[in-house]
Image (cartoon, rainbow, N blue to C red; front, side):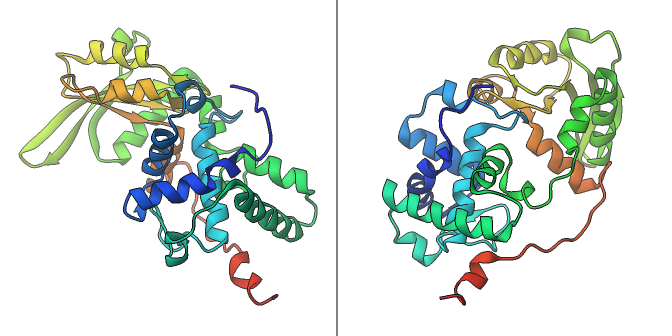
Length: 289
């Protein structure tokens, strides 16, 4: 983890995020948008691979907060889940540094008033260390923290159950032999006529999985299965992502910590669903003027 140099770095991505969405046709998936910003600004790999204390990718988290502020400002549509979409106002808005900072200060003040026991600096620090969806209601022990606290064999076995819940069959953990980095295998039936043997590797990390680790896993997979999956509670470096999808080589599916949590939530494995309502501050703000 790299120590942050200054606070509120996510302000830097307000304008570039709007620009990226315009290039993507006014909407895009979160990862697409982050990658487009990184491409447009020619950001260095070492910066893009930085993580927070939680193991979350720092850059993607900052872009998610930039999106949250722009949503509050009415520049992005908050109703489209899983997709970031510009509003008509957002399509025609171009932000410089000063304008971005004005939006930031406006909504920090509003957030501070809504959270009586939080100072302005505490609100900012909370945002820098957590993703937007977790700030309002944050469990004392998050799912990722619990998964990271398991024993190596415990994490492998909970991943086995997770894959079973996601329609894999004959899922088994190899055990302590760790045959060439392979932790387990299973079968995924696409339809009654087509099925794939899949091997998987479990990495109970807070850091990032490297390119070489993906390459080593692929070497162990060749000749034994049609597909490979690496599941981690951490993240993957950009070079690891490129290696996983390299042309001419068997493709490796990568499941990072954030995707892993969503997989647990989708099948409600080890988690209980509860319905909560958050106040839409942007909606009520217009009635104060």
